[in-house]
Amino acid sequence: MKHFCCLECETILGGQRYIMKDGRPFCCGCFESLYAEYCETFSMYGCKS
Ligand SMILES: [Zn+2]
Image (cartoon, rainbow, N blue to C red; front, side):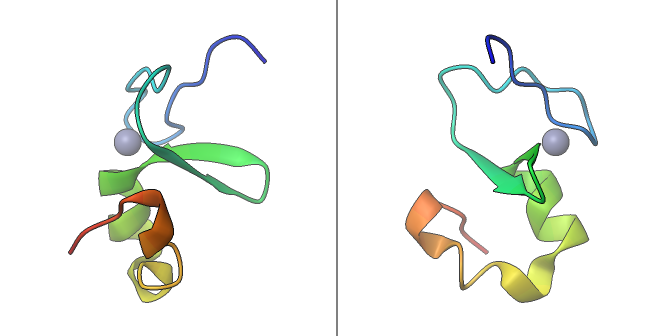
């Protein structure tokens, strides 16, 4: 893959932190909004609440 864009807000994720969920990339902010219950699990990726 060359370009990652957040599925939710279409932020370009190249060079930024992102989180893969079911093979789909999300920026941290959207991931928190959509899957807040998983945020602690993915804290290793830099997700902060
Ligand atoms: Zn996003």
